[in-house]
Amino acid sequence: MPASIETRTFHDQPALVLRTPGGAHAVVSLFGAQVLSWTPAGGSEWLYLSPQARHDGSTPIRGGIPVCFPQFAALGRLPKHGLLRTRPWTVGEQRSGDDFALVTLTTSEDDASYAAWPQRFSAEITVIIEGDRLGVELEVGNTGHAPFAFTAALHTYLRVGEVENARLEGLHGHEYRDAADNDRIKRDSGDALVVEAETDRVYHDVQRPLLLRDGGRSLGINVEGFPDVVVWNPWEQRCAQLPDMPANGFRHMLCVEAAAARRRIELDAGEQWYGRQTLIAL
Image 1 (cartoon, rainbow, N blue to C red):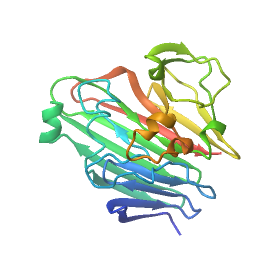
Image 2 (tube, rainbow, N blue to C red):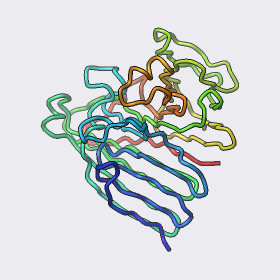
Image 3 (cartoon, helix red, strand yellow):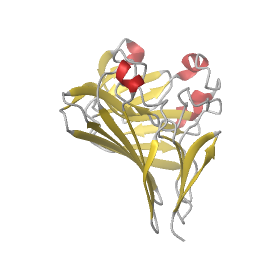
Image 4 (tube, rainbow, N blue to C red):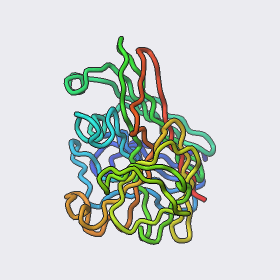
């Protein structure tokens, strides 16, 4: 049987469920165009979704892969992480074959977004699953008559058994801004990043693939188009301040995000930009 795409509700919100014959599975919410679950064929869940996440259709969902645009974090005047996380998206393309399933969701400006950010734009999220991989691509178009600039991210929450035992490899030698230490600029000197305290780093100009080791399993992380990588874990104190996270939630998640955060991306009228993150279960 070929792969399938099914429309259903997930936590009372409309969603698409993607499946491949080999057992790969993903859930994509139409609210925020957010991937909420991904299990590769023969593997276990790789995305963290908070058990206390709110699915009320107005509050950002804590976990999965939120889409940040046209602002990453609080680096600007817009609401944190921009305008798209709490929007209903429209289903565009749906395709499936013997070994893959693909969906595309779209949105564009409306009166509310234009009042906050007076730009004409289109945004498209494409999600594809194959046996051992998940690809998520964000495409942005400038549909207005003047240039605009933006920051963006795929705010990926990865599920780990115990964060202190996880190792993220591939960032050695890279410069990063440490938001947990007054935004000081530092250079990573370790063979692997091990999280043992609050971590909030923007690594600059990361070109190489990353590898996350989590006990007996590993995940390859490849990025195209996004120049930065964000690594975030709120740790105990900040996690306790998040109403949609359990007190021990920080122990079971690590955000490794494809981002354009250090410099804004400039897009002329009529131009398009895309960035992609691919996760590969090894």
